[in-house]
Length: 292
Image (cartoon, rainbow, N blue to C red):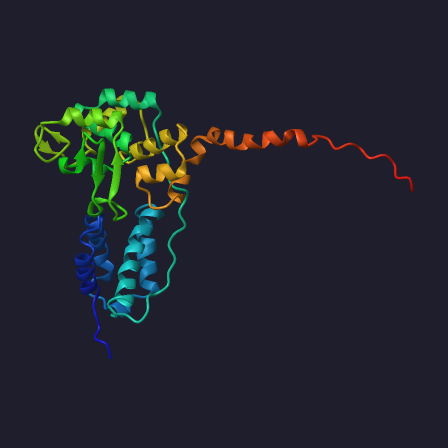
């Protein structure tokens, strides 16, 4: 008979094995909340009934999408306990909430300029760099000079710091290079600083105040990444290129921006026009049959 293992043992091992993940701290926060339900439980005692209780309790406190992140973490730990550690015979089956289409919120160039005018210089430069590169908040905030080559117009994010776990290459356009040039000499290791110190948080009163003064509502820092993707789509950047530029894992993640620039398909649709002369718009009416 296999020895029984507790949820706490699984959590400790999970955190050790996944400490390289970019979401490590977020996982720890979720696990602290989950402890009220799963703390002290043997893995064999975590069943569908208990998970459904977690599911609906959490959904009352947040969106279905957020609740799904908690459920997915429970499932991932139980699955590893079953498939890799052989601590569990089977993982209980349960469904996640159905999620709506991913939220896409972006700014047009005039709105972005209005925001930049209201931001303090250090946040304005970070916002420009985010839109120029499509990098996520943490990758902009924590960017180090060792990962930047201005001469070759290139930067990169190591796999340990990138969401999909793979190194991400970042070609630098003129907008990004102008920002980096303004940061030279400010800090020996960190690209972006405030009063000579690394930046710990961008969602500050300065950020929210600038949004309010610029008259911009329902906008988060992550929406700068949506702005990057939307502008690229409107400029005609194809899916496979945008996927690589933004570091998305699959092309499906990029297709949600397709609707913002339907005119880019006009040229494709027009390719059939060359065949138009061979197609009659109105078929000729046939005369009466000789047998009629």
